[in-house]
Length: 332
Image 1 (cartoon, helix red, strand yellow):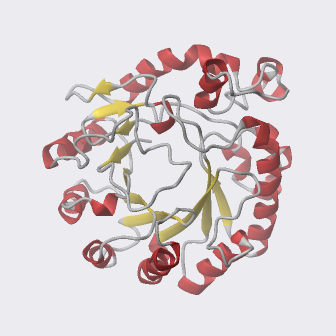
Image 2: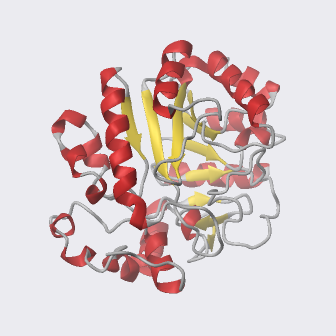
């Protein structure tokens, strides 16, 4: 998995966002990836044998050359996935709607926070209606019991399930955890809240299964959050919950490569023509290995899941916070 962040610009301001600074106190400069750097990033994806081109930001559709960059990506004959908040320029939306779902798909995060949430929400729904089966809806959990739909909606999962039926979206919901940034402050799901979040995910899973909708868990989830999800009745969730946390590789607009956005402050390298994903992951893994062994709790090294190789110890960014921040207290 490798992501190309073509812009740091965004039209929303989520308090949990771990991509806002990406390793710097000031916004990334330049805010938009150049065409030359994008071609270099595509070459890296090809050279690394990565099967999918994944574009993100910021809000990637805000790039002034978004359509041109998308056309370049299409020449690589790989499926393209775009991570978006759903509020995109009309030209970008119109072009995307002409491409088949086999070529282009979106993960649209409906937990985004906008200056004008009501208007933004209607625009996002318009994108869902026009993109249809190209869309997987998603939500990020930054607090275990907060609601992510618009203020007037009290039942977020039921609301998302209804959107899937209403607009013919892909029958999958992506659930992500809001991880801490190691180099700055953001709202995030504290490991002390993992169990409560796991109860919530378990409830969402049961309701989704009743409607023939699957859940896709993003990285950082761990088995102890909800061991019941390891049951075969929940299908692919069992494998997803086994705590994989490894260098994803995010390529920033300025050409730096980082392990992932939460770990942007740990280490970065400038993308070079000779690089490939395996060598960079190995490089980053050497910087993270000690933290990975520790786990987010002191009991992690002796946990049965860890001993069975079913967990890598949770989000490494949370581990680093545990040892670097005096206010990051863990209840064991």
